[in-house]
Image: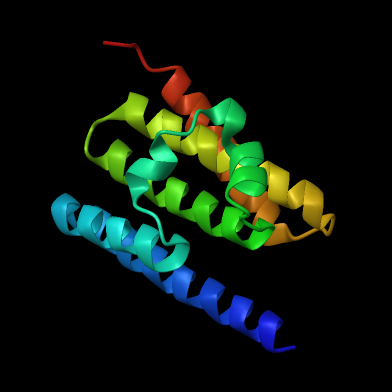
Length: 143
């Protein structure tokens, strides 16, 4: 029970952090949002963002699960952080960087949902939102 309570509390803290980040992004305070995001990577996953950025999409789940012994809960956290980072990149007019983050968020989200095998309307909405973000960026002209 303790482990489950701890995970739930961490997910609540992550939700609060994501809300803060999205609020900062909406205000246009990208530098402060980026600092909070970097701190979130360290606080929740004990690695800096660059560590996760360096892992190719195709190797993401396997590398984190087998080589670094992350759990599905870690992957859920990372998915949310990638999502927030994608939103930051979109707001900062960097759609190609955003696409990379959204695709990684989607990969992790789909993997954890498959492993979880329970239906959630909130998760269904998140999946749809990610899919729409990815498609809208892919339709943009590349520079």
